[in-house]
Amino acid sequence: MKFVRFMKKGGLIALVLVLALGFDALLASSYWVRDSGFFWLDDFELTQRAHPEEVWDKVIYGSSELTSGYREDISISGYVNMGMDYATVTDLVEILEGGHIELGSELVLALNWGALCDIMDTNPTYEWHRKWYEPYVYFQRDRLAGLVTDSFKALIRAGEPRTRQWLTQTKAYYFGHMDEAELAGRVEKLHELYLAGGLDDFDENLAALNEVFAFCEERGVRVRALWLPENPAAPADEVDLAVREAAREACEAEGVEFYDMTDALDAGCFYDTGHMEYDHGAVVFTEVLDQWLLS
Image (tube, rainbow, N blue to C red; front, side):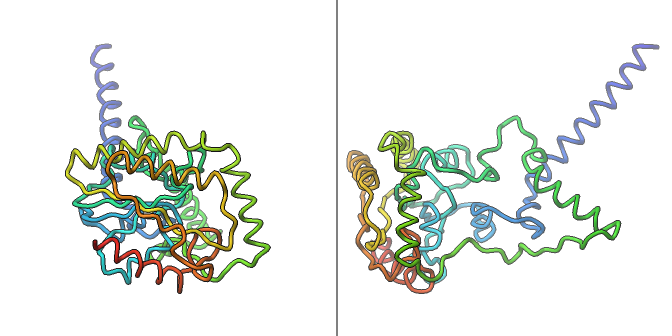
């Protein structure tokens, strides 16, 4: 009798566990968090929402400087703009090896010191940061808790119900230009945060370039690299230059084409040290870049 009761209790627990795991898997595969409009999205999710196709044939990958610089809406080259805040090459390795995207025929790496910086911040909502043993609901706990809280407040009339306000969300673009003092302050701050440690703080991402090259070679994907333009009004950082040359050497050693666009644009095209001004600079950059992308 005790055994039967134990089995009944154990069966109930097992059923609850199976239902919970099933719901978790269903929620993850439905992309409801991404597509509902109830949640702020990270740049990877915004790219996915704009490109729901299973295979991305041609992809250009880079950090936020690429996001604001490459105008996919006016480009004639047909590349998916996979520019993302805090995107690094080591992130890309996780994305590719984890199957978070499927490449078609071409991958272009839009490099700068930020995309190669080992101590760069990251966005914790990027899906490749989810551990294999971590339930999806737990990974999304902050977002889901916010929705539950807002819904409860609306229910007791202590607040407004959450709307689908993020259906029209876009990535961050940059408009206007920093003045001379702002630009100088930006240069100093970036050096203190990310460049003061020298080339040692770029070792992992520079090594990760070879992992990306090997991944593409195994799958017959053409891979190229470019170095993003930099604002000539901002003094060049010696570490930045050293990172660029190290990236060039890594590419050339593997026979990967390296297009150096460091000095391709004038100061009027930039918002700050590297982010291009969306209305003018990004247009010029896209026109110049398209010629190379189509080559």
